[in-house]
Image 1: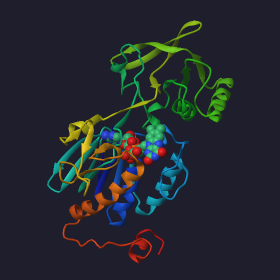
Image 2 (image 1 turned 180 degrees about the vertical axis):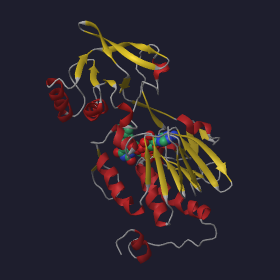
Image 3 (image 1 turned 120 degrees about the horizontal axis):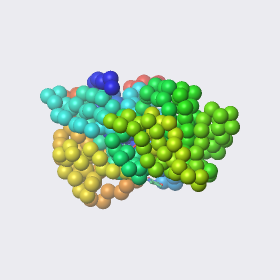
Image 4 (image 1 turned 90 degrees about the horizontal axis):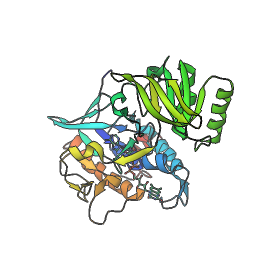
Length: 341
Ligand SMILES: Cc1cc2nc3c(=O)[nH]c(=O)nc-3n(C[C@H](O)[C@H](O)[C@H](O)COP(=O)(O)OP(=O)(O)OC[C@H]3O[C@@H](n4cnc5c(N)ncnc54)[C@H](O)[C@@H]3O)c2cc1C
């Protein structure tokens, strides 16, 4: 796996709504941000758990869909050019002489002056299917997400699941796979009807396989998969497989955040209510992940926390620089940063 190194002012762990809005508040103060998220797109819970549900308590929006809010936040922070690292989990946080070094399981290292943890309910982690011995194949032949499509070229791929991830990757990987079979326990799907229709069309044209049933066992050695056995209505079918992609949904776990030596309160990070700083100077926590007396797990609370956090982060990142309080309506300097002056 190749390694990447980057340097920035602020690393934001989590690209949910609060992490996204923090980019705006930090950007107004000239701080550049990198965001890291396990998911393959921005939006956190809004995008992953309830994208089409209307939200009624975002100030100024009597109603907006959760995905609509994420899209607006992305539009709002565009002038600040944040860098996103999707599909990567922050695993390590280390203090250095000049700030922090943040490392991910995707071999990315980012040096920064300030860390903002906006990790929500914790990391979204894939649910492992109940297949005996699957652990031995994980990250070698069994994957729960696709980081690089090239890693799947000319492979015998089996995808398991009936939701959008399973169907999207069936459609995206089919052109480069040696063979691809979708396995689902029933012929009905939760995925969008358009993807389901496209998948059935590929199956009609014999460009993919489709098996009804559940993967009951794996064949292979030393982490290298050679076949999977699918138990279905007509008995067990053996499918050649060098890559298995099970998409069984996600659960939320606190994950590596628990190991960074921060004061916790029942799986949430304790912060003060002036700066939203954790027990470690220079590490802030905003949004659902933090705890203070009276905390409400609401998006609007996370936005407020981001605004106050940014002031304190600026003092750390640019010591001695005077911070002038300004309104976006009347400050030409802020408007220049937003590209509207
Ligand atoms: C069904 C439902 C309805 C809701 N309705 C409303 C509502 O009407 N109004 C309202 O205000 N709120 C509502 N909420 C709550 C709202 O969605 C949350 O308050 C909000 O998403 C919190 O935002 P966040 O940015 O703090 O965290 P999240 O949205 O949870 O995002 C955190 C992100 O951090 C990532 N992450 C975590 N750990 C790591 C790590 N180690 N490395 C990399 N990435 C990591 C996660 O993958 C995730 O994408 C609702 C929630 C649900 C589930």
